[in-house]
Length: 249
Length: 211
Image (tube, rainbow over all chains, first blue to last red; front, side, top):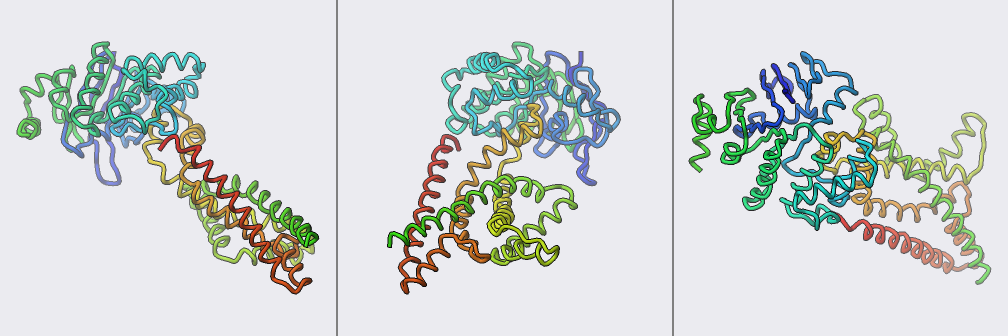
């Protein structure tokens, strides 16, 4: 089953086209890596999927629910219900600084899903343990390292039981050592067959962990296919050029 | 001397009443004003902007006179002077507080609202549970400034004959042919503002658990 289905998706700011006629789908249980140069539209794509940006035209479905039909959005209730199936992890975490790690994870469970506080707490503590952060439950974000913050933010997203977890360059704000921490978490989630879409500059990681990869450049999909194949033997010249820049470094 | 102090304490009480009633009305009123100032609709933003311009752009003393006398000249209505003072102060201070709130709200990173939206929080929840608590922390120093000014501005209530601390001190001064009562009033204002500063400092310390 396709968890996300996108057809002919386009987005413009004024007369500048940032996403142009994108079609792809994300299957249940797979990891899709989105790669491409900076400013190519990767983040905009995730932001459009999560409705932080609005699409100009095209169609989108999430878990079989049509949220965008030929450029027209579904009604607020449908949209809201469908978007709850998506979790988003930001590059710069965006934890709520006035809440403890624990409350960062319980607040939305209680306010959005209506879970009882004791239950929300159990879910949060379980996720913190999974993230290796049991000792930090009562710490505030300002007391955490970047890697710890990102793990709390992953837990915060997972607490709402999303069908897909979207990562917007989850390691770009971290130094190499902390990057490893986060990649390990994503790897573990992949092993549990969590459906994920990861925008990343970590080619090695994309190759090893992702099932499929998609190269975006200039707002269009240049190439998509099995991750290993796309990264090891890219077919298009643009993909080859892009990947060459990475191996040169 | 004791009698003078008694009068001055009564005057202080009036000043404190003007002060606390103004805060009680202006602090909440400033919130819709700030939101109106940031509204996407020009029909809302425009008038609110004009209101703030007028409140900040004309003397408070004039506004007090206007609030008290305008209803009389326009409709022949006269009403309680104390009420007029509280209305004028509240409407004036709401404009200043609103601009402080606006600065605070706009200083919260956009990512906070985006994270809340993606997590499914309603707009109301996002504002009251995520944005506003962070705003409160950020605007405390600027608000303290304004509240301290308000303590001293209560002296303007005498413009329409409300016998607050400064007026009482001036009267006593005239009776005794001495400037002493006015200096004593100065000490009173200082003590009140010391208390205000202390309250704000403590609140800041209470909120220092995160950054």
